[in-house]
Image 1 (tube, one colour):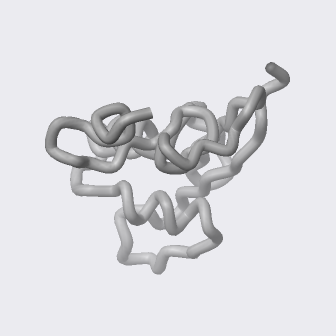
Image 2: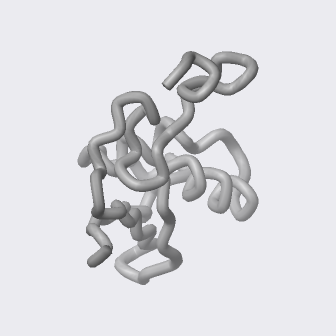
Length: 96
């Protein structure tokens, strides 16, 4: 794999849709990681990457949410004044 395969033309980080790691460090193998977005315990949507989740949610509530959603995935609990208050991400693996 060459540098152009791992990074886009502007050397942006490219996330593997399966495991969420940098595509050059992909660890997903056969399984596909699924990120499920919840608001106040209600399931909203499933995504194959945090980036896709952020894009979808940004279209609904605005802002730049990628870092916050990564924090949610890692266990961060937003305060009441946060745009992400009430949101939660649960991670599962598909049966592929």
